[in-house]
Length: 204
Image 1 (spheres, helix red, strand yellow):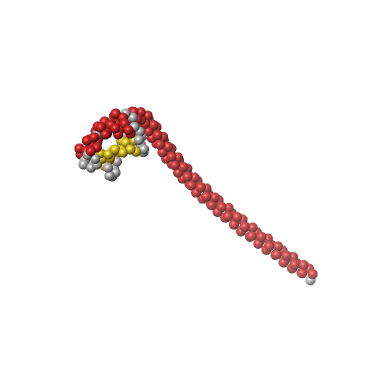
Image 2 (cartoon, helix red, strand yellow):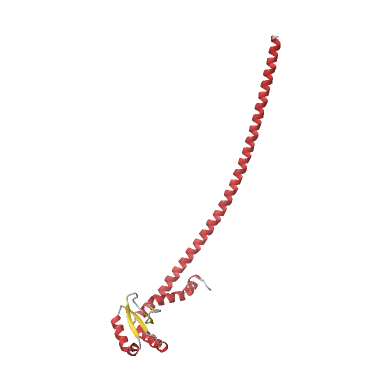
């Protein structure tokens, strides 16, 4: 009787151990398969991330390169304009300054413009002179433009500019400016294309 119980016990034990071993193997197998799937998915995700990162890096590199080129071109263009302006101003500033500091020339120019204006227009005229040398200029025009002064020509003084003059209707509806700065700006704009061509070979 004891022998049968012992045999039965051993069978049950062996079956239990075998079953436990099989379950453990099944669990390990499933765990290995899950680990393999996780590793495979992780590798795929890493590959996707790397590809996306590489693509974004290339796009960023192209964008930065484009920005650098554009900024460089703008800087070069601005530098060329500055050089051209400096060269042009060096060329035109001395003669223009000399011309507008010549009071005799300005007297003749103003007289010619006033007389020509009054021949074509009937409205009163205002001539604005700078504060510098005003007594000399006023005295001259009272003598040389006496007839025109009686026709409605007025002279006034301004401290807003130092050389040249401004002229326009007495009602102030508009003014035409003849200062050294006006002439230099006009000549600078006119000569800039030629200067750029001479300096940088542009506009040929």
